[in-house]
Image 1 (spheres, helix red, strand yellow):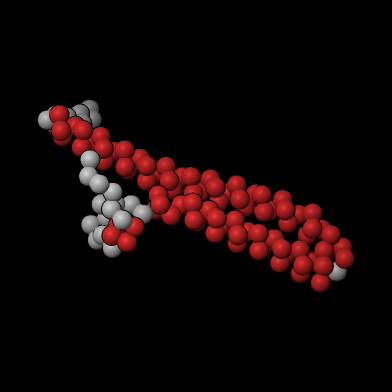
Image 2: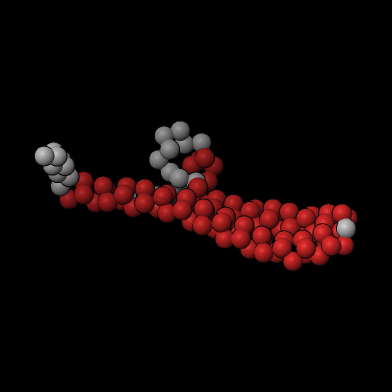
Length: 111
């Protein structure tokens, strides 16, 4: 197995043999949570600027939307990471198969 490239070396690898998404996924999740938190705070404050009733409603609903947004962001990023991990595992399976000298058999034609 070949050694893992550095971040900037992988970033400017025009053959796309190394994925950087798996390294950035945690940072993307933190950014999503920070943005969701800022939107929640701004929503609550603007609600109180519009009126007491609107402010109280947003005070109750904004945390719920924050949690729902965090769940959606997490699910989306997990799906992205699963796709990249499948690709990495397939790459290793192909390398193992080639190392054994076994060629994959072609698929059977449909009847």
